[in-house]
Length: 335
Ligand code: TYM
Image (cartoon, rainbow, N blue to C red; front, side):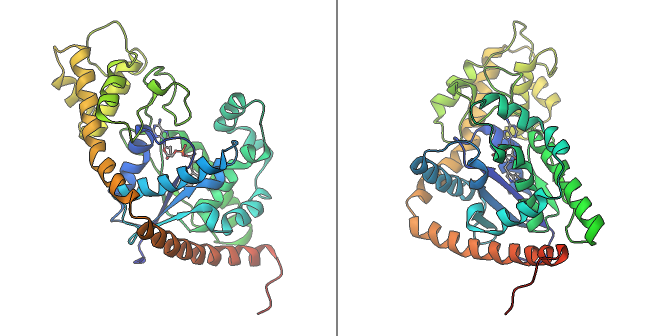
């Protein structure tokens, strides 16, 4: 399956329904970089356990996430698309890396601060060490590049710091990964509060456009998007965060620059613009939605891809894990 190209690694949590933030910030770039790299894409189900999950719904959502990756255009015969929890090395490497990570570093993580504020009744140790598990995900496969949205940048930085520290002690064990953050769509904001990022877990369904929303719902959500009292379609994130977010989404969906978008809507009102954004997003999502419907019926095809890719990922992960175990001085297995 792999061709000795550089390794690309990424993944998403199986928490909530995917939004166009996940698509424009990550999935779209995964698809565009796909041919250049040997790629692994994980369904990050261990990460989802930091929040209480309903087991039956969670299982179904993780499977649906796998299917969405494939429906977006990622071929599971060319890319290693697998479940994080099926490869034991993630948790094993995370423990070792925990011992090379300082509490001071974890205390600085903004996502930990945000999530603890949101789930004040369940600030568990998993939430705190979450970035170390993410570092293990990436380092386990000797990844060169990690395409993510802006919100994950800090986690990539700590991954690089942990890897550098480990290599400093034991020699070149880990490849130091580079983040890949797209020029557009890397920071999609909520449609109801453009100061906040669009999130799978937002309680207001009008704040996010989900990848499986139908065309009417998408258009309605964009029509209701919070903007300002001006009338000019102009990119100015500080002054006009709502409209700037819509420009960003439209530019990413249509592969246009912000200037091209401003020009296209010169002299037109917000109503026309919002409708155009809704239509552009609906047509961007349509092929993936159709493919998703088809694939949902092909249970045995998906099952066999999961099995094959889990094994491949396990094999790759084991190679790094054995090396790390040896370097830190754990006793080797007797064969
Ligand atoms: P997650 O599941 O929150 O998001 C998945 C991807 O979508 C991007 N993203 C966004 N991009 C632009 N605008 C938004 N509003 C937006 N919301 C989400 C995220 O940046 C991410 O790229 N910790 C990770 C999952 C993970 C991971 C990894 C990623 C676990 N291990 C290893 C890469 C490599 C997370 O919670 O992403």
